[in-house]
Image (cartoon, rainbow, N blue to C red; front, side, top):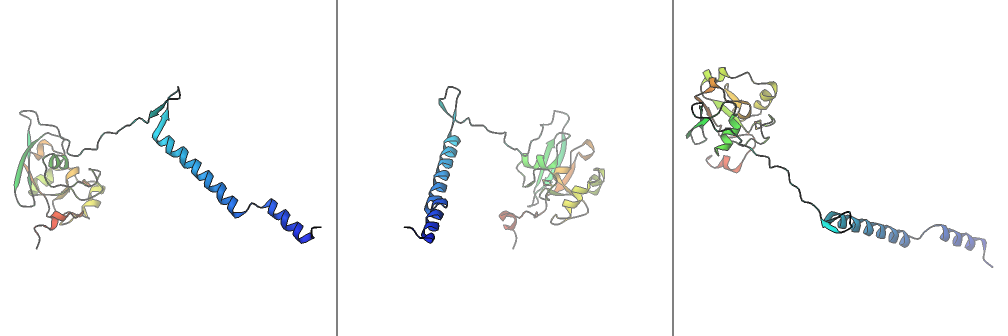
Length: 191
Ligand code: FES
């Protein structure tokens, strides 16, 4: 005849699943979940139930340096002075900004934030104060980013915020020797 203590133990073992059985239940649940996931990631089914390859879709590539070619007779000119002091005079259209112009002509202007006024890697220095005065005042966002720019001057602007207008025709801007997002090439000519 079973003693009261052994009776209690056998009742407990009936109510409580053992550690092995819990592990087994978890493992089988996990493996069936991952099977479902791996199948659904590769295949989707048509209405007729025939497995199809999942359709592949793409979104348009984010492009920098998109400019409008100037119409004959309507060209405006801007000159970039690169880090080596070389001048690049470029014919541009009204409405294009300096970041897009520089990138479209393979000049070294990073534009890390894509022109959203959230970095200072498009920093340019307007060489003549007259042209600087013809530009609209920088907004607060631009001023905040300019504070972070390397080699800030009285005539510094962010290239992505400077839009070419008739008044700026003939302007020269200098690219600073370094920007805040440092690149290996920034150190090339430094001793
Ligand atoms: S590209 Fe970042 S602020 Fe101009």
